[in-house]
Length: 182
Image 1 (cartoon, one colour):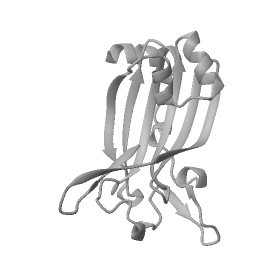
Image 2 (cartoon, one colour):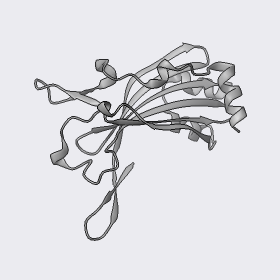
Image 3 (cartoon, one colour):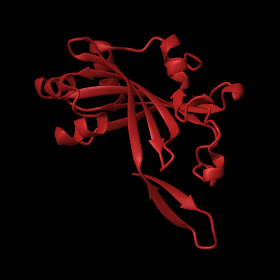
Image 4 (cartoon, one colour):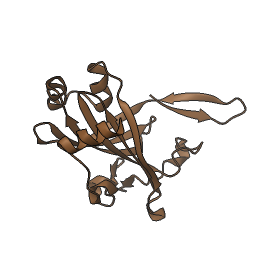
């Protein structure tokens, strides 16, 4: 569950339910997968993160789990009984007009290497992020007056993860990069 801080007189932490909406989960070739998800928090399901991942599988056990599509990245490491190694690659503000920032990191183990880029609204950590009056459109969403729901900017084509324009190592190169980071 996601947690937010209540800034009233007595600071306290309130945990919010996090929903994962899968936009894309594709096997590029055996052992290489691409995934895009939107993380939504609170009762209003406010988009707080668009995560794009490249998953390189290094073992048969991981291959069976990832190929089934039944587990997310966190559940993958948990099911394999591993705590992944975390390597932060980059944290940066995107174009101010986008109102977002991003972080890029790698989670790796003997079974799998996951390269992840997360794009989040610049005001994600503001105390009022989840307040009801705030139900304006998040920088990660566009809203339609005809519907009550929202669609991510990725779906509408207005936002593209910056990593797509950069070359990311994949397959053996990803494994080598993860090993070098270790």
